[in-house]
Image 1 (cartoon, rainbow, N blue to C red):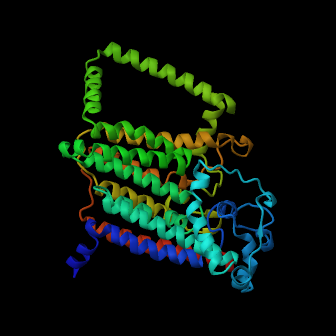
Image 2 (image 1 turned 90 degrees about the vertical axis):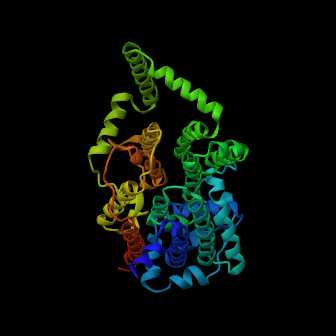
Length: 450
């Protein structure tokens, strides 16, 4: 019996396990989650409506402004009129100029591309029945199905770290995003695709095969790079700095040039190393001075970073919204679920350690991971008028997909720690996924009803 269970949850079947569980919870969330279950839900509905040329007038439902939250739905849940109000009553539609908020619209960025898939679902929903509830439900179902299918293919094609991918894309934050109208979902998928191509290239050892597939490989990585620019937030663009790593393994000429440069660098004297270090330090200080000037100077910015890191200001968005709690204002998830997911992800990172012939890859990807975090906080320095002693507006989901960058860093660590039985970790993951996603739906609805 135990052997059968082990075989069913082996890496060979992880993509199938992912597809079944993800599709189940995405469908459940799409149907039963309150409207606007994602942060800035009203905004995402407005943009989706504009892409679909069917902008729903949400003012009829108490949404006077395009803000965020589910507060306006509490009364309908408590007096049991929610289904009639949102699903049976037909929606009214308005022109873009009548929206109570200026929706910045650009056909060449993530705001537009990230809302195309839910817009298709919104149109299908209108054909079925033109109410806000039915239209949003079909938009969620369309997004959930297509994004789940995309990740299924990515995990199936992945050569290494299948369990890490499965865990991350089954976390409540990602599942809730897939079952919503948020543009974050497309970014999550594109990041997964881009890093899958990189991982597969690093794990490929047949140099003849690499050279024979060079045109195809180059097309795929360039296509995913274009998707990264057009379909994801700017904080994920830092992944483009991984392109040299990709071509190091994909192109023998480029690899030879890099190896020659590394050889020259290794032959430098201690004095030359010291000189380069001082030059680098000076350039870093000058850069820090220049980029901090718009926000009060380097000392002010350093103080705000310091206070953000060491002091809790009662912020709801943070570590909790990284894996387990997509919308802390309304999900009411206990802190232990966040701790559980973080510990679980660390154990999975250790369990999937692979042989790293080039340790620099692990340290480079870790540096990009940290740089990405600091970069997001830098972008948010001006948030809300920059009138606080800390940095506001940063949400954990901004870093959720970049957790995948840690895979090669953990493999580069000289640690003998490794879970004794990987299948036991897979079982714990599946239980955690089912329990925490179920809690997310239950807690969100209970919070509206109590």
